[in-house]
Each structure stands twice: as C-alpha cells, then as structure tokens.
Length: 435
Image 1 (cartoon, rainbow, N blue to C red):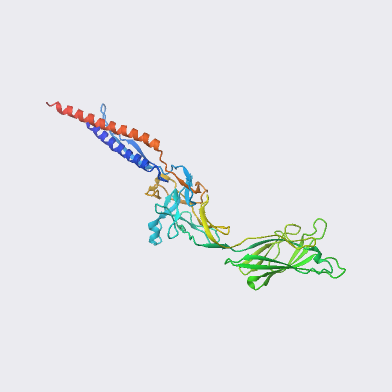
Image 2 (tube, one colour):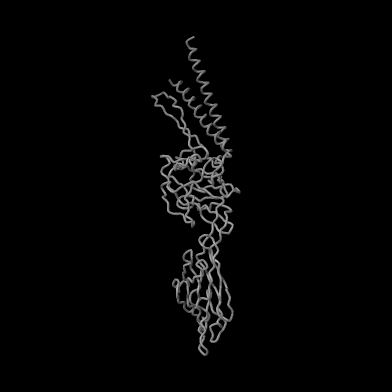
C-alpha cells in the first residue's frame, strides 16, 4: 500500500539521519584530537518497482566512511620526536601490549602522527600506547637492505638514553712544510718530529709519531731535496707501520712541491689521490699528503718546519644528548662530542586504497583486503611524502562545516518525523470512514 510505504520510508529517514548525527557528533567531539580523520555518512535512495499509475516509496539507506586520505594541518611542537607525515603514506607503529608480551609477534599498525617519548624501557611510545617501529641501523649507522613488502626487519624503536658512542680515526690529512735548508750539503739541522693523536676502535686516545729525516749530501754535492718519513704507532709499542721516501721538486714554478713518493713499507702511494694507507692497531688508516705538484700537502720550502694543517676524523667517546627524526625518516642520535649517528630508519607505509584501512581507536589503522597490500618506501621517495619532526597533525574536522551539517540533519530529521505524523493522521482518517 502506498501510504504504508510512505511510513516506512520516513522511518528509514529517521534512522539514516540519526546515523549522520552520530558521525557529526563524533567529528565534533574529536575536533581537538591529533591525527583524527573525519567520518562521513552518505545517503543512498532505495527504489521499489511500481506499477503504472502507482508509486511506492523505497526510502533511504546510509553508508559511513572514514576519510583517511584527508589530512589535517601540521602544527609545530617542542618535542623532537613529535612526528607527522606530510603527504601520502603512514608511519608504522604497534601496540604497547604486543611489545610487552615479547613473543616475537608485533602486528603492523599505521598512523599519520604521534607524540613519541621514551618510556621506562626505552621504547618510543605515544600517550595512546602506540610504539614506533623502524629498521635498525648497523653500528656504523648504515641501514641494511630489508624487504619492502614484509614486516621482517621492522622492530620497536628502542633508545638507550645512557648510551655512548665514538668514532675511530680512519683518515688523516697532512699539510706540513719541511725546511729546504735541511737537505743542503753539510746541514746539521737533523730530524723533524710530529705527533698526531688518533682514536682507536674503543675510543681510546693513541698517538702516531711521524719522523722526517733529511738526506744530507756530502760536501760539494747538490741539494738532495729528499726526506725519509716514518710513521710509528703508540698502540703497537711505537712500531713503525709505514716508511716513505719523499723527493721534492726544485724547478722554477713547481719548487717545493712533491716530485715523487716511494714506499719502503706500508701501503703504496697513489699519485692521483695523493694518499697511502698504513695499518695501525685498529685497522687501516689513510694518509693524504697531496699529489705531486700540489701545494696543499707536504712541501719543502725555506728554512722552517711548520705543520700547516692537520685534520682527521674520529672522536673520543661521548654521551647521548638528543634524538630526532629527519625528513627522510632517519632517527639520529646526537652526542656531546659533536657527532650524530643513525640508529633507525622509519619507513613510509603506503597502500593502494587508504580509505579501505580499518580504523581502530587511538588514531591507528590496520591493513585490510579492501586497502590492498602494503609497501614500505623511504620517506620522500616514490609516491610518499616526507616526515616532519617537531610537529603534530591536527584533527581533520572542520567545526564550522560540521555545525552546518548538524542544522541540515536536524531539519531533515524533523521533516521525516512530520511525514510520519501526517501518515498517522491519514491512517486515522481512513479508519474513520467506517463510522
């Protein structure tokens, strides 16, 4: 009966608008929730086939969707491990409960923002109980190659706030001027000695003693312009680890620069790079003394011995001072000795259908068949955006828009209620016909 279909359609309208009211109320309630994605209720008409000259109301039904692909604006914070995704993609997280079980099973959950701080066990944990996941780096800060279509390799990010770090010295750049007068016939100037501190693999301080011995020609012979350089390592009981014969050019225009280097012991000298390698107690160490003809390395000029410039890598042991995540997802630790080291890489997780993810509480999401399979990208690579530190993503709720929809929903609900009241009056009139 047509009048009955009107009643049923209006009841469906009441139910549908109540559903829309629920999503609006949820959006407004979470207008200050970081990382919240607004929910949307869509209406769909239902059509019932009618005969010619008649019409039956089919009513309406609703579908509710979480608009995960709509992002809120980013706001800056003062916490270095407050992070937010700028663009497409999500960061991997897992639940605190899964980590505490310690059975090896860490379910992959996704988030777009989080305020992470170290807890009592060192895990980077958000107030909602989400723990950040990442790929651990090797001791030298290099992140190995991990599978991109699997969670294998991902582990909860754990920071030891008391950890220390140092860097071994592996390279020395040497710019020294040797006195040309020392290689003249009859010179009595003698050797020149230079001591250089370096740090071994355990952060201990050691010394390399570099000795320059001039070749003094006999009386009446021309200047030799030749020196013997020896390198002794204190970590090996002052054992000589390298010996080289340096010959300098005395021609006009190139006078004082290296002419040739011959190795007696130690690694071979490379004329292209101006380098050679010796083996100290902790492993190989490269020396750069300049190429032949260059004025920036070891030279022989005038009558004074002068260490012009000595630079090297390596540092003593230092304590952790801070951590932060850069735009490419590398979590770096800074130490009070001025170095920083990569501890983890936070990948970006992407799926074909972001809105197909299952929304969980605490602004977390889970992979579903509707979302499609995931892939782990480097932040800022491929289709994904980058990671912003010292930032949070605000709620995607537009309060003004939600209030406008609230008015529309209230009017629609009242209108459906009015139709039900009208149908009731019409049915009453129908029953009065019998009187």
